[in-house]
Amino acid sequence: MKRVFSGVQPTGNIHLGNYLGALRQFVELQEDHECIYCIVDMHAITVPQEPKELKEHILDVAALYLAVGIDPKKSIVFVQSDVPGHAELSWVLTCSSYTGELSRMTQFKDKSKNKESAPTGLFTYPVLMAADILLYDTDVVPVGNDQKQHIELCRDLAIRVNGKHPNTFVVPDGRFLKSGARIMALDDPTKKMSKSAENIHSRISLLDEPSKIKKSIMKATTDSEGIIRFDVENKPGISNLLNIYSVLSGISIEDLEKKYEGKGYGDFKKDLVEITVDALAPIRARYEEIRNSQMLIDVLKDGAKRADEIAQKTMERVKTNFGLGL
Ligand code: TYM
Image (cartoon, rainbow, N blue to C red; front, side, top):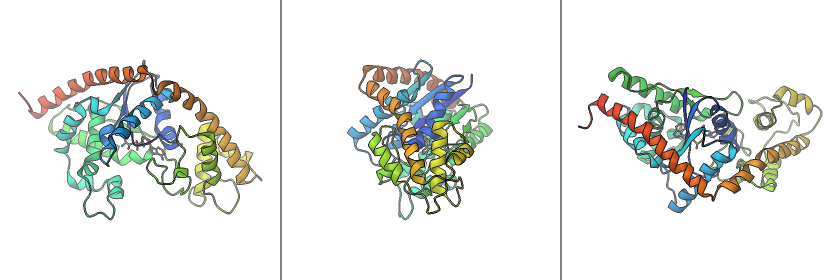
């Protein structure tokens, strides 16, 4: 069985972009892959975090993992900082990386724009991500499109190390969905939907109340043409909404265009509100059951133990191949 690894940062509530781009894949893959899903808290501290809030967000993401359908009997679910191998391997990989390639990462460039100096953690963020993946001899990494460059760097690092120290790492592949891999912000469809945007109506969080979902969708930016047609370049707003509608309902975009021929954005948005509320209601209900349960803690503890066993084996191999330790 091929091995899958992926992670989500506990930096706020998971939104529709995370769900449609990544988490949906996590659930699907666990049927015929050995899956490892991580809550990457060490990535979260690349920007300042309030300790109490971070703790809560870790449990929020863990509960949402299970609420969307990740089954701890099939998949390993754990918190990154509970397995020391991530930090260890990250250092080894840092020593195999170059400042030039890290400076070219668009996420780093965006986050450090107009700043004289940026936190080092932001700069080495992709190396820690590569360590997450390579630590588990991962074959497949399901992620959204925004992580493409990071996956490429991970592959480059694995290939580079293998060139010097043969058979150290498995070289992984990214897995990106055709639709849903890039959900855009509702208030500005030229930007991706993100957890950190100031305007809460730019995103739909998986735990949003129906009234909030309604408000965010009804306010979503469209255009003045009033025709429901998929055209990302000229009509990014309605195209994004069509994309969300299509993925959540399973109806193709062409069929949706036909269904809404001659109708206005208002009708379309009302239906999309209903579809979204219906899709998220069972997730919210399951989340409420799980969030404060002992079961959740037990799943994370057991997950960390199982992940650590795999990680230790990789670290032994890495240390031997690099000539580290006794
Ligand atoms: P994070 O927490 O930002 O996002 C989690 C996942 O959601 C995807 N995603 C999106 N997909 C579609 N549309 C969007 N608007 C959107 N926004 C986010 C992301 O691509 C991601 O798959 N660096 C990662 C976390 C990470 C990781 C890893 C992932 C750390 N180590 C190892 C895979 C493997 C991140 O920032 O995710």
